[in-house]
Image 1 (cartoon, rainbow, N blue to C red):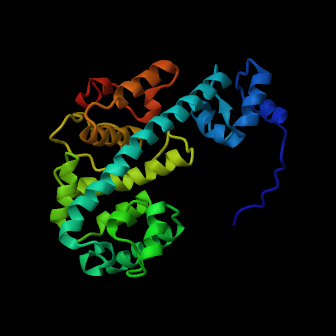
Image 2: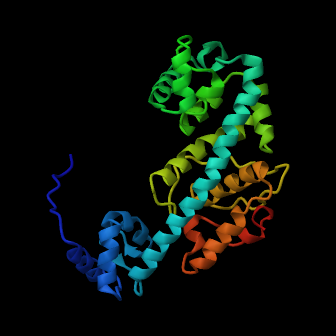
Image 3: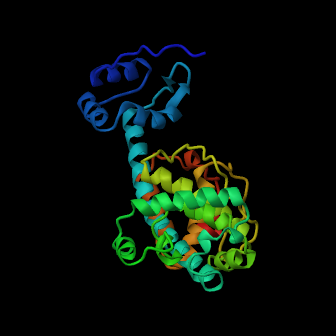
Length: 299
């Protein structure tokens, strides 16, 4: 049984004093106060954890600077923005391809038909979530649909799939029973098997939530590891010695996926420019191997 939390709120100036007592170098106190008044102490704490020599006492390594922590935070913020733009492109394309390949053979309401589901319990759960998500939508094409139609109780798939969450879309694809249709969608993205797309969709839903909720990407341990095929039809990686739960494999599948949709996209160039802008950021914090820039995917 845990102990009762009794700590009281402290001022920004007291937060600064604590950091200095732990060995953090702060050159400009006023600027540090402005930062902590804008970005909360515990949001920044995730970034300075890497600078600590002892995670129990929270003592900092010698020479650790508050300014470097702020730079890491700024890098992370801009990286999330870059990722979110790419994720939007992928997400819209996935919805479109699923509608394209599933609807002609399985009808306008296949997502409401349990005969097309691998698992009945997951089907029921997914459908309940879909109903909630559609009911919350204020998109014009949804409200207009309900003004005109009363049956079935949900719009057709080409409307419904546009308003459900990425997580729900991932689960819907995963639980669909027809492997041929799922393979057809996967091949649109340069994947040889639907199991890879299923894995990447699951991971993308988590990554999207991290970006949408301003969560830290640097030095993050992701709960879901993407399946990483050794061979791909298009430019891919050759070295698989990276740590599986870091950001690096997440970025690899995202770049490959984005390349399949927009071959002339600038994501890799933009990412490298971001690293140049923040030279103090160590790519090892993102799980990148030493030779990552030599990989065909990242050239």
